[in-house]
Length: 154
Image 1 (cartoon, helix red, strand yellow):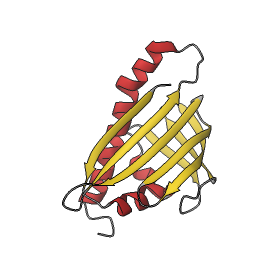
Image 2 (tube, one colour):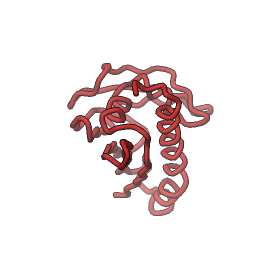
Image 3 (cartoon, helix red, strand yellow):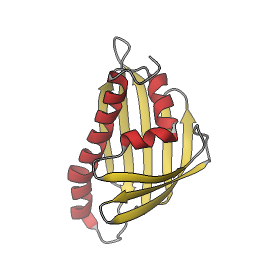
Image 4 (cartoon, one colour):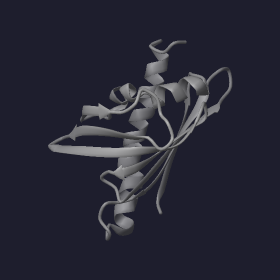
C-alpha cells in the first residue's frame, strides 16, 4: 500500500500542535487553496472510536468525508481513518515530536488506496508526487503561519 510522509519544523510545542490538530474548527485554517469547507460535524476534541464528518467543495465537486479517530495519544499522536471517503483506504497519522528550542517536528504519514481498483502504479505515483506533496505542504505552511502569527495561546 502506498505511503506518503511529510515532516516540518513548527514553532510550537507538541501539546500545542496536538490541541490545534484535534480541534475541528482548525480544519478551516488547513483547507488547501481552492477548497472550501461547507460543513464540519465533530466533537470539540478527538476521542478514540468517535466519528467526524466534513463536507468540502473542491472546484465543481462537493465531497463528503466521514472519518474515525483510531488513536488519540496526547500530546504526540492522532490517527484518523476514512470510513466513507474518496479513497478505498485512508489512514492518517499526525505525529508531534519535540524539536529544539521549544519547537516541534510535525509529521504527517498517510497510507492510502485510490478509489479505482485499477489505478495502478501510475495513479499512486501521481498522488505521491503531485497531489499529496502540494496538499500537505499547504497544510504545514498554514500550521506554521498559525503559530508564527501569535494566534495560538503561546
